[in-house]
Image (cartoon, rainbow, N blue to C red; front, side, top):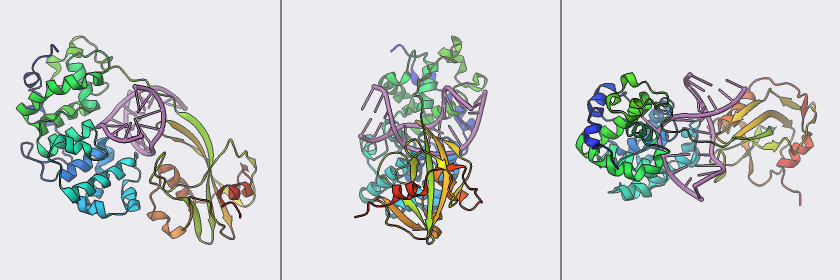
Length: 363
DNA sequence: GAGGCGTGGTG
DNA sequence: TCACCAAGCCT
């Protein structure tokens, strides 16, 4: 490593952050003391994984009112916790957070970085972020923002994540010199607001010492990662209603939308469309986008006179209970459509095929 | 170590 | 419309 000393190179970050820092509901006023509520830091860090600040703020505020401490969260039911997380995505985080709260409620807070990293859902970044922001431990927290800022500042070629170990060793003295909480947050704040993928170097306190700027290469450092093409699929999304109940999948333990209730879905490739039956209602479909999938969703509503024995994993739910169940955006959309008039579908699967796909095998 | 995991915003 | 991104983690 031929990098200049971190405490010196990063010194302008501290005074810049005092002026430029955003007022966020999980931030402490005093950056030199341990945080008054480590749990608030933990909640915010889990919510902020792969999620923007503006999206997180209202969820964080409601969450802290509903689950004000680890004990309250640990005692809450799974559906209640997922309902509070509904719409935020990556729902596994909610289960990790509840499990971590259970450990903290039972055993107290871990006393070191390794202990934090053993909590579910806390990897190298989040453990260091909680350690530095909540407890003032000199643990370098490297997230996407920090990697981008440091890659440009130090003119690192290739993927800066490959240099994570070197960067942590290099950064640690700067945390000690300028305050772990202050420097950790300042580095990320700079990446989030100034040293963005398309940076505005005019407002950067480190512009005079930035290697990428000097070389006029901020557009190519760090390099963009390739990503896989999403897989395409199409499905019928079906609300089966009978006797004041609707049929839903109970939450799964893993996979897409695990932890949430879901409408039954039929693969449109496997169940070909015929002429729409008079007993069916339909609405215009839409493309549901996930990180690795693109679903063409065709929403349907089928009313029956009587319930039938539901297949394994499916449950009849009183319609009045629907608002309390956690659903993903796709399934919320069909739930909300049920309150608006639909039309007889131009094409749809045979109603008997729908029922057959959702019924228990008859003995 | 590559794939899987949600959703909303932006150019 | 589309590509890319946003305070990652787990398997």
